[in-house]
Image 1 (spheres, one colour):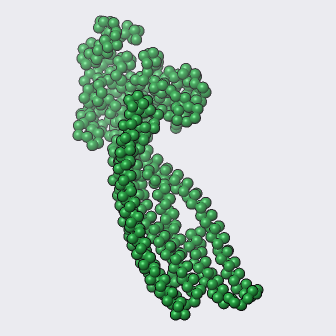
Image 2 (image 1 turned 90 degrees about the horizontal axis):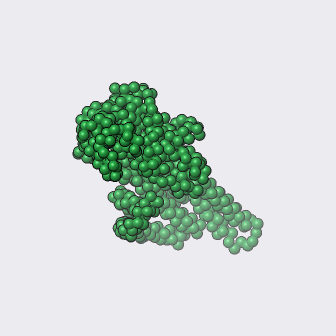
Length: 586
C-alpha cells in the first residue's frame, strides 16, 4: 500500500501534463467530440487515481489503528514482563525508577511512531524517485537542488531532537516528582491527612513551582525550534526560487511548453514537500530511536537473583528447618551491614517468634529467606541445602508471607482470597475455610453480596473495609496458599484487642505441622510461639520460650513487664511468670 501511495502523486503529475498539453492543442477548435475526448480521457484517469488514493488512505487508516493497538499491547506486555522479572532490589533504587519511567513514557506511542516514520520514509522515497524521473529531463541538477534546499531544516531538526532528548533525560526525576505530588493530591489513601493537616496548598505550591520550571525550559526549547525552522525555510525558499526563475526563463525562450511549466511547478512543489517529509521522517526516526533506546535499556536489565543451571529439587515438606549460617548482608548503596556473621536456626514444624526493636533487621530476614536479596557472605539453608541451589520459583512457592503492609486488591472477596494460590484450582469451600481461619468470614457474610462483593471504592459498587479487616483478608490469602513455611510480619498490628484475641485462639491450629515464623512487637502473640528469638542490632541476643525468657530477666523480660505496666495490667510479676494464668487473663 505504501508503494502504491508513493507512485500515485507521480502518475497524477504526468496526467496533469497530458491534460494541459491537450487543452493547448484543442483550444479554439470549438466544441466537438474529438476535442472533448482529448480532455475527458486524462480527466477520467485523474479521477480514478483520486478515488484509488482515497481508498488506499482509508485502508491505511484502518491498518494504522490496528498497528497502534497491537504495538501498544506488545510494548506494554514487554514492560510488564520485565517489571516482574527484575529483582525486587531494583525498586529500591532511584536510578531504576528513572529507567522504568523513561521506558514507560510513551514507549508504545514512540514505537508506533517509529514504525510509521519508517513507512513514511519508504513511501516518500518511492514518490521522490518517481518525481525525480519527471524532473530530470528538465535538468539533472533539479532533484539535487531540492535535496540541498532541505538540508538546513534537516540539520536543525536533528540538532533540536537531540536537545529535546537530553532535556527529557535530565528532567526524568523532576517529572517523577510531579507525578508524586499529583498522586498525593488526588489519591484516596492520602485524602484524610491532606485535609486534616491542610497539606493541599503546600503540595499544590510544590507542584506549581516545579511545573513552572519545566514549562519555562520547554518553551525555551520551542523558541529555538521555531527560530531554527524559520531560518531553514528562508534558505529553502531562496534556493527553490532560483529553480522557478530558471524554468520561467526556459518557457519565455520557447524551449518548454505551458504543459511543461505546469508539470514542473506541480512536480517541483510535490518534490519539495516529499523531500521535506522524507528528511522529517529521518528526523523522527532518529528522535524516536533515542527514546526507544530507553525502552531497550530497561529491557536489558538482567536480574541477579536467578536459578543455577541445574537447580536441586526442593523438599515438599521441610524436615530439619531453616538455618542462617554466618550471614552478612548490607543493602545495596549502603556501608553499614544490617546483619553481620548472623546465625539463626528455625526448626521445622515449630512456631518461631522474632521480637526486637525497630531497625533490628527482622524484616530483612524475610527478604533474604524469600530471595529478594542474596547475602553478601554466608548461607541460608533449608534442610541443610543452600536455598540458592533451588529454583527461585519453587522456593517462593513453598513460602507464604503476610507482609506488614498488605496490599488491598480491588477485586471480589473470593478472588482476593484465591489470589493466595493462583496456580491451583480453588473451591468455594476452601476459600471459606481460609476466611474462617483468619476470622473474617462473619464480616464477609454481612457484606452486600458476601463473597462476591467488590472491595474498595476505586470501582463501581465497591465496599471499603477497615484496616484490621483488610489485614484479616490478607491473612486468609496467606493461609489459602497452603504453603509449608508461613511468615507473618506483624500479623495483628491493625487488629483491635478483641479481634486479636479471637485470632490468637486459633493460631496454633492454623500453624499445625507447618513451620511458622512470626515477627511481632506484641508479646501476647510472641508467647504463643514454641521458640522466641530476641533480635537487636542485627544479632540474636536471647532465645527460649516465654517462661524461660521471663526467668532469664533480660531484655525480653524487661520489655514484657514494661508493656504490661503500660497497658495498665494489675498482675504482679509473680503472676506474670505463670503463663497459664496470663493467657487466661488476655
